[in-house]
Amino acid sequence: MTRARITGVGAYAPKRILTNADLEKMIETSDAWIVKRSGIRERHIADENEATSDLALRAAQQALERANLVPEDIDFIAVGTTTPDMFFPSVGNIVQHRLGCRRAGSVDMLAACAGSIYSLSIGSQFIQTGKYRRVLCIGAETLSKITDFTDRGTCVLLADAAGAAVLEPSNDDRGVIDFDLSSDGQYWNLLYMPAGGSRHPASHETVDARMHYAKMKGNEVFKVAVRMFVDSTVRVLERNGLTAADVDLFIPHQANLRIIEAAAKRVALPMERVFVNVDRYGNTGAASVYVALEEAVSAGRLAPGSLVLLAAFGGGFAWGSLLMRW
Ligand code: UT7
Image (cartoon, rainbow, N blue to C red; front, side, top):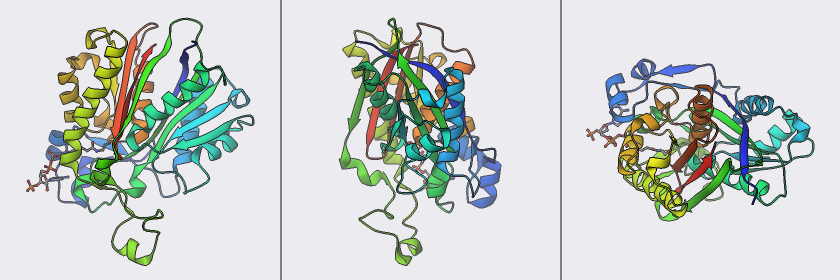
C-alpha cells in the first residue's frame, strides 16, 4: 500500500510570551516550582482578538509553501483541536475558506492533546487508500481561552500554538508505517471542561461557578499518562518488529518534562533521541507534536530515512502513537 509522507511542515505561536516571572506576579507560584515540576520556562499566549483558526491558518500557509503546493491542490483538511473558534463551524471549515482550499473537505477532531496523532493518522488513511492525494493536517489550540488564571495547577501549564503537516503519497518506503489510536473514557473527569456543552449549557450559573475552564487532577493525569505513552509506543514498535533502539527521534506530546523523561526511560530511549521544547511552549494540546516536529525538521534533526516515533495523550483519555520513516 502507498504510504503517506509529510512533504511540508509549518508552525506558528502568538507573539505574546508569558514567562514564569510574569506568573509569579499573578498567582502564588515560583519560577523554581514550575521549572522543577514541569520543565516549562515560558509559553505563548494569544491576544484577545486571536482565535484558534488565526494560528492554524499561519501554520497551514507555511506547510503548504514548504510542500510547494497551492491551496487548490488540497483535497482534505483534518484538524485536531480542543478549542475551536466556536462550537461550529469547524476550524477546518474556517481554514478551508480563508486559505482558499476550494476543492477540500474539512473536519475537526476532538481528541484533546492526542488530536495531533489522531489528525495525522486519519489524514494518512485517505492517502493510503488512494482516495486523496494531498491532505492538510493541522493541530491548533488557544488553550489560554479555557484556562482559569486563578488555578495554579493548570495555568502554569496550558498555552497556545498551531502546527501543520502536508501529507502526499510516497513513492518509496518513506512515510507513515503504522499508528496506534487508543481511548479510555473512564478517566474523563481527570481532565475536562464541565460547561458549554449539552450537559451544562452556558448560563449565568455556569459562568459564576467557573465551569467554562479546563479542570485537571494533575497528579493522577501524570501517572496514567506515563503508562499510556509506554503502552502505545511499545505496541506500535513491536507490531513492526522494531525496538526503541531503532528509533532515531522520539517526538512526544510536550506536556511536562518529567512525564517525557519518565516515559523515555521506561521505553529505553536516551534523551539525546527525544525532542523537547516544552520549556519554551508549555502544553499546547493538539498543536504540540506538530510544533515540535516543525522545530525538529528546521533544526536538521531528521534525515531522509530517519525512523520517527510520535506520541501523545490527553483528556478523555485519548492517546496514541505514530511511526514513520522520514
Ligand atoms: O496534556 C495532558 C495534560 N496534563 C498533563 O500532562 C498534566 C500532568 N500533571 C502534571 O504535569 C503535574 O501533576 C503538575 C505539574 C500539574 C503538578 O505537579 P505535581 O508534582 O503532580 O504536584 P502536585 O499536584 O502533587 O502538587 C504538589 C504541591 C501541592 O501543594 P501541597 O498540597 O503539597 O501543599 C500543590 O498545591 O504543589 C502545589 N502546587 C503549586 N505550587 C506552586 C500546585 N501548583 C502549583 C504552582 N506553584 N503552580
